[in-house]
Length: 166
Ligand code: HEM
Image (cartoon, rainbow, N blue to C red; front, side, top):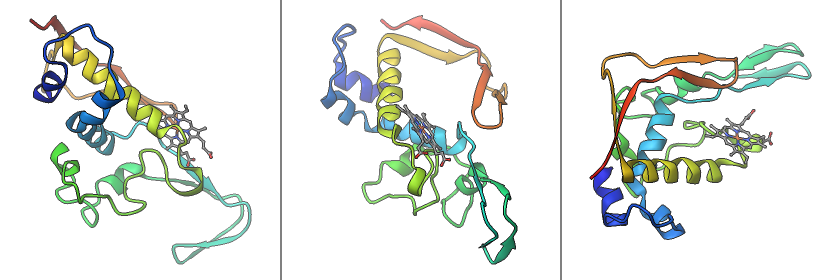
């Protein structure tokens, strides 16, 4: 990741990030996608407004379905070694997750219209932070503490050590 960022900025810690930089930050993008696969930040649901048949079962009206995003992202029918954090899986040009198996931004009619903006924001933030700072976890073995309001899953505490990069 640092190699990619450094090869793009060539030690320049001040200049603004450009569209071309963003398109070159392929490994940073792969990391963001892989983190979001393993730790999705949003839960969403679906609701039946009339009796419906879904997945071979009959459901009455007013049934709420909570979509288990993590179970889909960790299903080994769709993902090779799903429990492994492996950004490289996204670096293969021919790799494209099967439809409905990577649903960080939802899928189908209600697919997030802000997904490209969100990706640009996160990847650029990551590149600009790591261009200038060395950031390390204080405790590599401490589990990530999260909380959820039922929809969004947020990190409530993450202790890091930040130093300027030379
Ligand atoms: C990392 C950031 C984001 C994540 C993880 C995310 C995730 C999602 C998901 C999963 C859905 C589908 C909900 C469903 O099917 O019920 C959704 C919908 C939506 N998102 Fe995002 N989103 C993000 C950023 C954004 C941004 C930056 C915007 C706007 C600038 C945005 C605007 C929307 C809107 C308007 C919908 C509703 C679409 C509809 O119902 O037709 N999102 N988002």
